[in-house]
Length: 306
Image 1 (cartoon, rainbow, N blue to C red):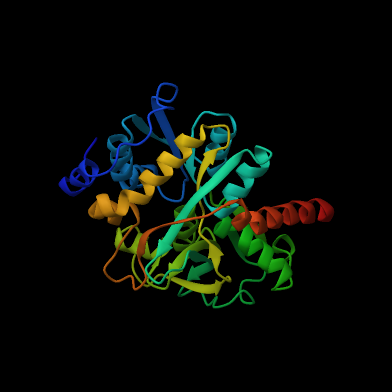
Image 2 (tube, helix red, strand yellow):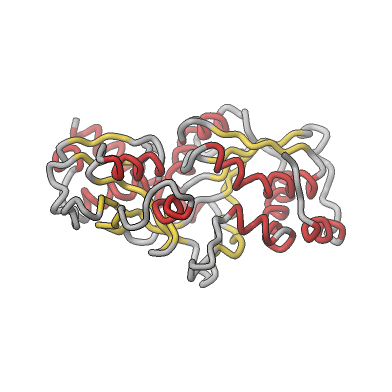
């Protein structure tokens, strides 16, 4: 399915032509998206951006999906895709896997000017678990080993701030495979607690699942929240032409103005969200170095403790 709104087409007609020097070698661009939600919704949510980029750049644009985060990371490391919309931790994983061979250019900008979100731990509201202290000895699920909010940040904070190692503290530690799978597992009683994320108390994974009718409202409650995390970046292979990286980055920056309705779908906009996404902000490698360092700490900590 390909579509682009009249607003987007009008904006494209008034946008200066982008440089064509790289297009002979890159007639198809593939961008990867992570498995934070089911594949049908992922493709639906990113279709307006895909269609817009195809029109703006004048080349074919395809969406690449995988069953887990590592599939997208390995695809960009193996030069199978050019671009990926990554989380902070999956960016750090790609940075490490490619020996610094990826470049972050943009992250999400919110209405209040911030560029962050939060890792949270959730449980059923009727479980009697209202804190991490109540969860001791229970079944806890992380989302994916390469998830920032679903694994790296909560694991790091549990050890360094909360004072316990998850493998020793919980009765069982497992991976749900995705954020939606984590929340579903909590609702179904497979997991007592699970790690996921939210932007604020009105907008997050379990709130969106409520909006989509996937779970009933009021079944899932937050029991822990992390410090703010920098949102993940749009990431390019470093071995791509600089003009390609800049042209695609500029095109993505123009998406919210060119297709406001498409951007709302892409960003999961809801009227109830007091601080919705409004666009993008430029970032660089230095912005995510602390995430790279945190992943290295986790890897070393787990190795020394095994």
